[in-house]
Length: 205
Length: 197
Image (cartoon, rainbow over all chains, first blue to last red):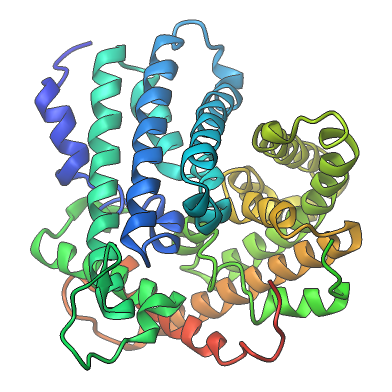
């Protein structure tokens, strides 16, 4: 393949330049649902990083053997199998968090980031590059999730990772732990990101 | 089994537990297709139809096949395959027998497979232990709730495009998210009318 970007470049693209949440607005369903508590966010991130990396790797390894017509089905099945592993692991070791996350672990399957990476990158590229691409994308995703949780948990509950950090007499912003707070936080983050780095490609669509 | 009346569940799924505004499901198509009212309507109708049928279908498959065989862990794969297969089937039937409908829904149907709201409804159905009629009502209600949300947002966005000047960077997804937040705030006013979990 001509002018394949360097490994470092692939990794950084996902992490920051084309950040999946802020730039491509992908996979935000789970972004918003799990970010009212930092602990949930961290567990979700770990699950997602594992799934994206492994499925990117697998899709890439199987790329020469997968018939074009049924590739979506194959990719979905690969992703679903990894998500089942994650789900069973979380249920076994962190039952409380598994309860709190509810269906959102399983919803990793329909998270557009994974499918998007498999479709856009992993099925044309060698395994190592795909793994790095997956790692970069999922880390970029995780960073944004943590940033949102970092705003929502202190304002909503007055805590961070369960420790009280706000001064005495702080009135909790209940709106932050409910749905609207999540939409506002993400909306403002996307705005800031776009303000500083306007995206010419967006206008053409 | 929870004992909520299916009809209560139906209204709860539209207003108090709106799948988009309180559970954040189906946001990706919501943001990308809400630019025009017409396409929002088509997508909404497709979601209502597919969500109602697949939630009920998955309920039957889960309780009649997976539970007796102790294969509950494979429900993710089974659900997603059922949804994908069903969408494909519907697409073929609609194309063959109802061409006018195909023009309206056609391009949206393939997109539905990756709509997490559809999959999410099936997952909630299992977690909340709904019986068959409850899942049917829940699926229909969630679908309609999603449609209501996407149509209202697209109407607001159409108006916004014509009349207002937005600050740099706010146009597109950012303003849509903030408006969605306001809409969710409005729907929060319904909570407490019906309590469902």
